[in-house]
Image (cartoon, rainbow, N blue to C red):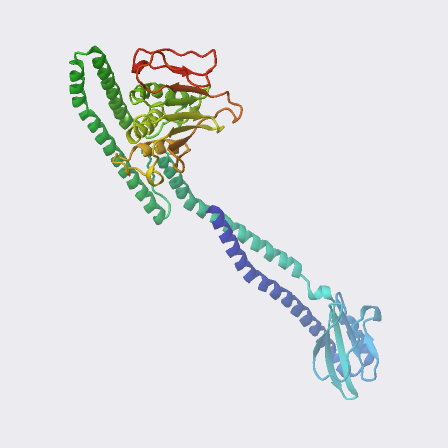
Length: 478
């Protein structure tokens, strides 16, 4: 904006200067020419009385007296003789004695000649005064230089004033832009000191009102989430008491562990509600995606075995760092796996893959062999065609977008694929990564004498026979 103001003022001032300076330059040139011609006429008039007296010698003396500097004066008598300035000073020639009035002639070398007729009894004599080109333009260049300097000074002065004006206009706009950037970055305590023109002050005041309104809305939402989470503690406590009252120690331990996990989730929701919108230090969170996926798959493995699902986990042998909090990554993966368990028949296999195919991030892929998404899937918050809340995919998509990545759904072939591309501080270059590790869980079948060996295992791999459905073998490939 400041540059545009400069250009506008410079263009406007330059046009105004040209509109005034150019005519002034032309006027100066014409004035100098007119003054030189007028001086030549004065010299011819001084010789007129002597020429009119009819004395040729006196006329020559008077013409020589009038000659001087850039002026040369000669007299052409009625008998054709020329007296006055020497021939080497006169190169304009004399006029015809037939002229009847004072005339001004322009010569090819830029000089001018003033011809003054004098009527006598024996005929007409002509007094000619030649003015050199230098006399006609005397002082013009100096005057032009003064006018050009004055014009440039006025343009520079106008630019200086424009710069001051632009500063007074752009500084408040820059402060508004910086405040908007801080507000967009999550600093809800941003305030703007309104300044500058009235319109900009109004924008600043409106931004302050908007920031205050955002703070109120965020505080209200956080309070509502915290209150709702706190209200869940009472039924959770009752559920824990019921679980502890079970006689079967195995069932009691299982339900108690589930209740403990529920309590952790409620506490995490309350902590998330109290979490600042942005980190004041500006340092993004960093999480190892491989570690989180491995931990959550251990949790979901139990339910997969109960529903006879083949759960496959493919993880790199090195950490994959992503710019997200650990609990947020876990929540996104839980949401995707919950969709698999809720919307596919029991026994449907699924695969969770982490790949480091991006030098600045990682990709989390959840693939199942179920019926797939209806109408290509839904990523809009609150929308569901399967009778659920419609929040699961949105939680995952918001996590991906929050790291600078993206979320995609593939529903062209059999089954469904949800792919989250998560941004991070950097990963090994694609193609240089070590081989993937694959973790497979065998689906629950009628209790066999020994667990079958998965296909493709080498002789160094081990399998373990489990006593029950919860302890089915899980193999980690090298």
